[in-house]
Each structure stands twice: as structure tokens, then as C-alpha cells.
Amino acid sequence: MPQKSIVWLASYPKSGNTWMRLFLANYLLKRETPLPINEINKLGFGDSVPRHYASAAGRAVDPTNHQACLTLRPKVLQAIANSGAKVNFVKTHNARSRAFGTELVPTALTRGAIYIIRHPMDVALSYARHYAVTPEQALTAMDRADHVIAGDRAAVPQYLGIWAEHAKGWSMGRDFPTVTIRYEDMLSTPQDAFARALTHVGLTVDVERLERAIRFSAFDELKQQEEVTGFIEQSANGGAFFHSGGAGGWRGRIDPGAVAAFGKAHAKTLDHHGYTL
Image (cartoon, rainbow, N blue to C red; front, side, top):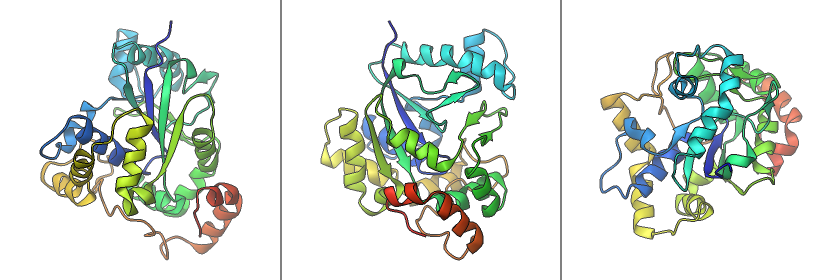
């Protein structure tokens, strides 16, 4: 019988997934000092880590070969789910959909999900910086059904699709319990936002631990650590991973025509999550 042990930490790229993972790690490990950011993988796995695919295959795997990686994906996720842990946190940027017939997020292995969503214009700005494209090019990619982050030595291909469909698929799915948490609420009301994440996965909220984990995963703390040690998830294009961490920074920095066009195409999803342009 498949073990329904996976709790997905899901988001579109550059939406706060790393922040949530570091908060959870600090909380669950009962840290008395901030967890070093390069020990982030102490909490769970990522579903795009090439070494997991090589382990499943029993040999080296070309992470740029999407067909080979998709063939191995069910075995990779099965191994994670059957690891013996009651809960296995798995980071993903993949949409809740199929890619060339392969179910990317198998319900049979899933216990639940935390979905982090962020204003798409701030996503585009951060995405552009991370992948060395313009914000307008980022928005164009976010409006494409075939939007895929190609595989490289750091990750196998990730199937994102259209931003609005990604958000709807995760936040409105009914196959397993999912809580949707806005990045902006993580900024403005962190005690409430992070407590919702803990409660959703069945954890008791210890107020002192909660507030300490929030401090230990605060943006200034993460940025300072990166300046000293670097960060294993830093873009190959260079530049800081933890750049600004705010909300609304996109205003005046993206072509108004591109903003208007994206807003028209994604109006219902923007409104549903309380985002304005």
C-alpha cells in the first residue's frame, strides 16, 4: 500500500517557499540559534534534486533529459513516501497536473500541502533577477501553458505552466487537505500566517517557539547569513538569493502595458487572492 506521508511545500518560484522551509526547520528542530541557511535540507526533500533520480535509477541520470526524469519520478516520490517517517515534507514548484502523462503530484502518496502564493508582479521581478531575464519576459513565461524550467546539474525539469492555473490547481484542489498562505501575510502578520501552517500539518503551536522561529527565519537574518556564507540555492547567474524580500516593489519597475495585459488575463485569480494592480 502506498504511504500517504508527503506534505508538499508548494509554490510558484520566487514566492516564499524557501522562507517557509526555513521557518519550519527552525520550529521543528527547536532551534535555540538560527539554523544555518545551508542546512535547509535538514527539513525534507526537493522533488527536483538530481541525486534522488540517480538513486532511483541506480546510475547517473542526465537532468536535462525530461523524458528520463519523468519516467523515474514515480519511483523517486514512492521512495520518499515510504521512508518510514510519518510526515515527509517535499518542496515543489511543479503544478498540480500531468506532464507527458506523468502525474506530478500523486494523490496516493499525499498527506496534504502548504501552498505559498505571492503577488505575481513581485514574483516576476524576483524571477527576472534570479534567471537573468526582464520582468516583462518573466510575465510572458508566467502566461504560458508550456512554461518549464529546464533541467541542469542543480535540478531536473520543473513544470510550472500558467501562473493562474498553478494557483488554482494547488489552492482549489480537493483531493487532499491544502492550506494557502499569502507571502504578504507572512510579512504583515507572521504569527497568524505561520501558525496556520503548523496547525494545518497537525502540529501544536508553541507561542515561544513560534516567535523564535519567525525571528530566526526573518529576511534580515537570512540575508546576513548569505552575505557571510553564500547560499546553496543561489542562482547560477550570480547575485544574492535574498535580495529585498518585500511586497509591492514591482510598482514603477515593470512596463504598464505588460502589467495590464497580465492583469486582464489573470483577473479572477488575482481577485480571489486579494491582489490588485
